[in-house]
Image 1 (cartoon, rainbow, N blue to C red):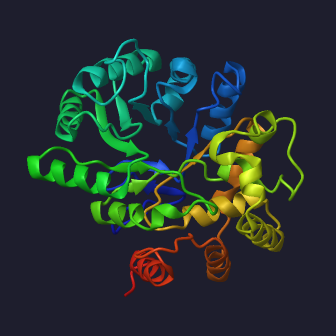
Image 2: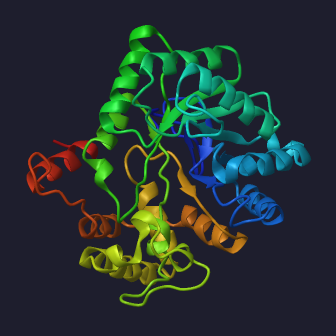
Length: 352
């Protein structure tokens, strides 16, 4: 959660250690321009704002820039609502030709940021994020560019996505050493099925006062309750459209007993509260330490509205503990064996 002692009223939290207040669910827009056309995308934004949302996250590579353009046209036609939106985007991956058309060098980020501003139709982006670590560019070059962009008024804050714990810690220390603006957020994959970040990344974020913005909070749909053991999905799901899609591959998840233990427990808790499994999974994630805002990746207005219902769900401590135990991150080797995991969990929760 926020590093501040005083929390905003309602379902809002501060953006890491900053004073910017955001809805505890961010609207992810990777589907815009791909799985959702422009009209549907605008309907999704309308529904999100109507539900109290004020935090929109995108990236230059989403649909090769189309996602930013779609958001930009919505902002232009909804000036009153747009004034309250906290806008976030990312840069790092290839958007241009040649060896300098990617990365986190000053050269590439200068072009990438200006292009994002143009596509979004704005002069200022609230949160600019590095989409991934760049092993080639010196980190101080990247951080100095981001500090300069803040001083120039092009961005308000910066954050990272897919950084490891040591990378986040190094960036925070470099920024402090040089007197540059510090990072305020980190976007990691985090959900009941994927909890490995609790070993190093969550403690690093808590130490640096960085707020987490988890992506894939429903594990590519696995935590929505729509999949059944040994029954391959078909139709309009990510897995049905592409069963071999990376970490979401059906065979890998289906063969893991842990997957179904988690889903069975999730379903039981959802039935007890008369809500959807998605809402329980999102409520559990939003209750975890360091989490600022959970990124929703809805493909339709109906999915979005169901997911936003998690804001009203308050899980009992027994529910949270039950879900946490069944989904405990797996690690057998030192120092990530059971004793080490238990100790880190106590430290994250504030105990000894």
